[in-house]
Length: 425
Image 1 (cartoon, rainbow, N blue to C red):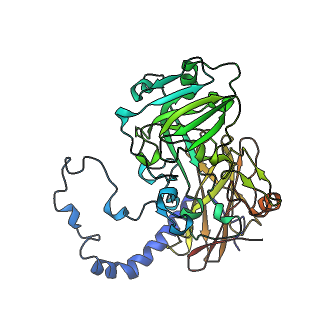
Image 2: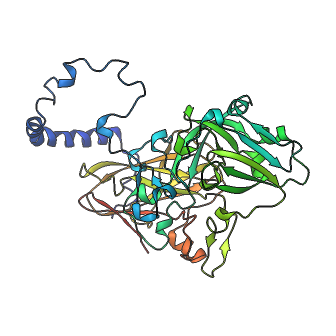
Image 3: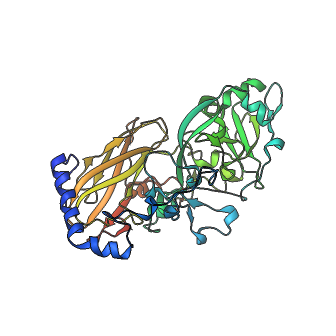
């Protein structure tokens, strides 16, 4: 088993030596065979794409990924739900880098399929314990002062299949109900202030315009603190599957509260206890009782590569571990990585921006000697919360729930470089 001495910080000389050694193998054996198999497109020959004019600027009015990236897509698990209209697909985390999720890869969760809303007919209604009930058009909303914020959105059921043990064999399937984008929108506080809040106002009920009438109760304190009424994601209009033309953004809290196709905001003095906060989105405990109002998505991390869908293919030598960490309580202060199932831990390198309630990217570099590995990551957030093991979560809550599983994920790397989803005791 690799020890802590085999850790990040490989010198430039060692790295170059490692790369040179692997390159020598290719030059000695594989080059001629690959050249014959691929025609004449390998150096030192001039490749075909260098000999002819490509498409002009009018050929692709909306940019799409290269055809060679056609497998980088959202994927669903058909047997998870009864129909696709009330189901979920998963973000391919193992194929991505950085912290921003491309709009076309953000996971989807629907309760009645994707609503088709004409922005000209869109209206947002405000009623209940307000001084003046109001109706806003999309243009009205865009006239308010706007802001840009980067936040992660995670479904409460992310990793839900793992409560009773390892189930789905892929980072995309176990952790892929999450994405992170930049939202452009209006602070919800400004819209509520426009309607005027009565002194007995305590809660806001957000209702969606889809066929399910998806709705959730939100404490007024949260609504006034950092919630947004968003109409853009990553600079362009919301995608239809993400609530076009307007959705609610509830930073750090479970995704079902981020109501899509936002239609109505009702202000009240108590929670509504709607279907989606009673029959679902409560945490069923071992004794049969449920935890309610468990909105915050606790500190969590996952190694995205290597993982079951991203095995080690280069053989022994310099290897880069890449992963994501996040917390609904704030920022990520530290991520540790273990190569031996949690016996030894080393600090990973957090790279890129560390933003409040956003994804954080981490890396760990080491020399792999070809021995089996048990890869784990453990995050610590800005309030000092340490990501727990799955065993610790089960001791506290049992295995009845499908929500709020933020336990440490283990990947078993075999000698072949293949990876599978496992658990360690």
